[in-house]
Length: 223
Image (cartoon, rainbow, N blue to C red; front, side):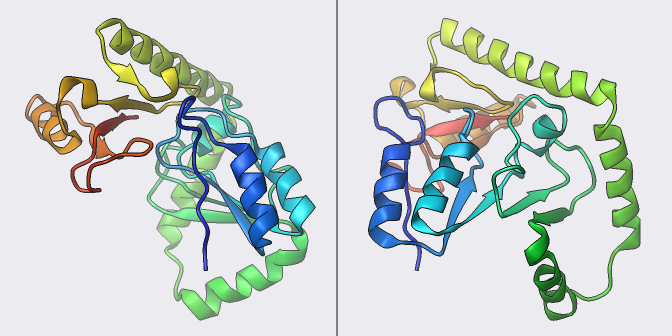
């Protein structure tokens, strides 16, 4: 059983008061934080505070932010979460794959469930490529890259706003820019197809409280 929390209808930021209220009401065993189209800073410490108060574990999926976190351009959830999952092929710019971080007391059980219960033979060439990606992520050049990525996204958001587009939450703190197309009377799938023909890659994406179906959407995601 799962219970969803959302964003504030006015600010379009995560509604931590709602997270707290739902956590107090439902007493979950685990609270999950993370996002695929949330452009703002996520307050990991606040999630941890709420989780501790209701006796829940905290799991964070940082797949979309991992590279920015490695480059110190976005806050890290590692000091707060009991479990952190991520891909390695998004902002971390490594091979397609993933990893799991956890507090020490859970590591043995996680290893047991990954192998032999869920996975078989490892892909050693992918593991080697991950090692290269992690090494690159430790360099000053990668840190500069991560910070520049956020600067670029902020600049893009401001220019799109100047051209009359509505940016969800008013801007970005990450690499993601989520555009609300409703004022243009354009659907997300229409914009995705049209921009694709111009060799501009975006994806149709739901916006907060989206009235459209998931395969139509009222927005597009950049980044």
